[in-house]
Structure formats: structure tokens, C-alpha cells
Image (cartoon, rainbow, N blue to C red; front, top):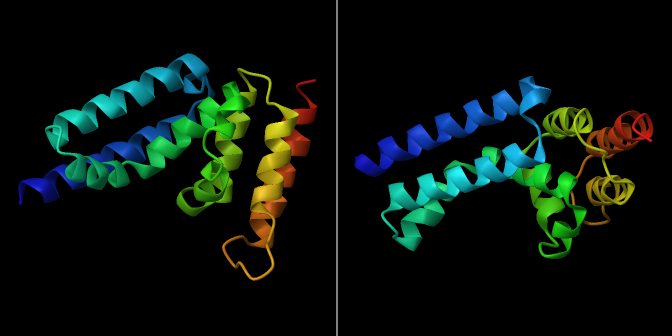
Length: 154
């Protein structure tokens, strides 16, 4: 029972944090992303009592906030994508295209969004032969991000 309560609380906190990031560009800075990532990791360690199996379960409960924060970190430092080749593919499995657009738009108000990252988002979200994970609407959303929010920052 304890684990279910903790999982529900983590899911709730994760959605609240993501909604805060989606609703306020002022929170979407690289400094805040680092602080949020550290805080989430510390919370997960505390809740799991350093039990790695439980940590992984709790980490899944915080997927939406973690992916949102990690997207902000990738925008702030696109080189981080080299260490995690599957991040963009996994991103669109957790966050929908509208959320990715809004987070990118919010980050673009505080930080110049890298063209290479936008290209990678567009390429990753494009439909692949034999792989139905991506939809044309996600590819269109990624293209919209790259055109609307990147071009006006140059």
C-alpha cells in the first residue's frame, strides 16, 4: 500500500511540475532545469530508500517531468544528445507534440535554440518505414518548432 501511495504522489508531482513548465516561460531556464533534475533525483532516492528496483519504478512515475526537464537540458546543451542516442525517440513516447512545442517555445524565450537540435527533433519525429511510433502530426509539430521558434531567435 505504501508503494502505491508514493507512486500516486510522484505521478501527481510530475504532472504538476510539467504543467508549471508548460505554463510559464520564466521557469524554463537551464539553471532551473539543473535544479529540478537534481531535486527529482534526490526525491526518488529518498522515496526508494536507495533500493534500485524501487527507484526505477518511481522514476517511471516521474517520466513526464524528467523528460520535460531533460528536453530543457538538451536545448541548453545539445551535446548531451550524444550521450543518449534514444532520447528524442523516447521523448515523443512520453510527451505529446504539443507539450514538446510549448516547452521549446518557453525555452526559446530564455535561450537560443540550436538549429542542429531542431533538425534532430524533426528527423526523429518523422515517420519511419515499418515503425508506426511517429505520426505525421508529430513531424509537422517538430517542423513548426524549428521554423517558428528557432528562426525568430537568430
